Amino acid sequence: MTNTPDEIIRSFCAKWADGNVKEIVNYFDENAIYHNIPMAPVNGVDEIRLFIEGFFSSAESIDFEILHQVASGNIVMNERIDTLVIGDATTRLPVAGVFKVLDGKIIEWRDYFDMGQFTAGMT
Image (tube, rainbow, N blue to C red):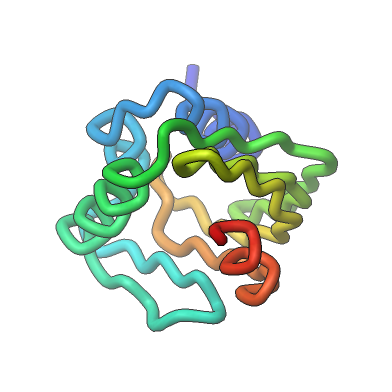
């Protein structure tokens, strides 16, 4: 049985708590685009892997708490609290994510958040 886009994104978000970059990256299509809107987009699974490895190289833990999630066809949108522990700092960051899933893989992922709030939590 094929997982729905809603189920795929819920599973994907849960995987971040494990910190296994290989498993996280496996959710992406080879030509996926990942765009944290305050930053430049990351294109292709190899660049996405490097970007995610960069997060985990400095963070002791990353956890996505989905507050609300809706799906329509292959589009999934969620409101989350992303909790990042980096050194002595813990940041709880409100995030809105938009995902496009095709053939069981993420082909587009955009996250919207306040970069000022993110960087303030890192000090």
